[in-house]
Length: 209
Image (cartoon, rainbow, N blue to C red; front, side, top):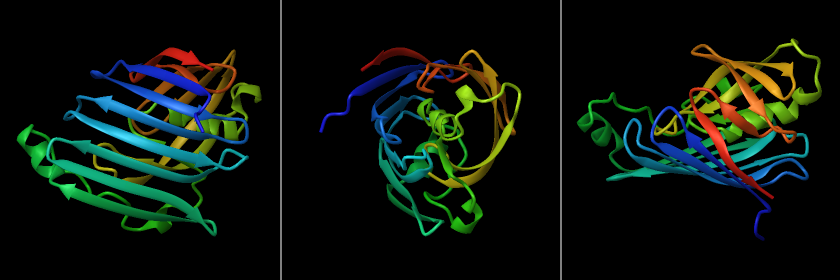
């Protein structure tokens, strides 16, 4: 069945864009594509589903570029994350030929490190901030009260999954401050919790329903 909402973001940190089709009446189901030229040109396709409480239930990701392709699935089963990864071709060769470091393997060597994570994140995506914003009801929460989260974070283009600590703080007027060990930025969101502007990453240019 065709999905009713389309959102398009333009990257501000590198040449690229993100397009997502989604349905958000009973949790979130979304299919999306990321295109970017950094650190090497590649495309990333994802499919994510949450429960009605907006806690993530499953994420499938596939990334592909010249001479390589990788896949990864994150799935919550009996309160624990099950992680599988696959690889074709040689991403490391593509990275090193462009002057970049080798990548980690797709997936996670120790999924127990992800225990307690209710949200997933995807590097370079503007969509995934919506998951904790909606799950915690941050747009209607008291301004200035911070929420510290453990997140299953998917690195691109490697599809390596790591545990990440993040802090979300509602600021009022549709703004939410996002902070991790590398950055602190204020997200501008619409009434549905979709990011309109994430400084240093992406700006929404089209949303249709």
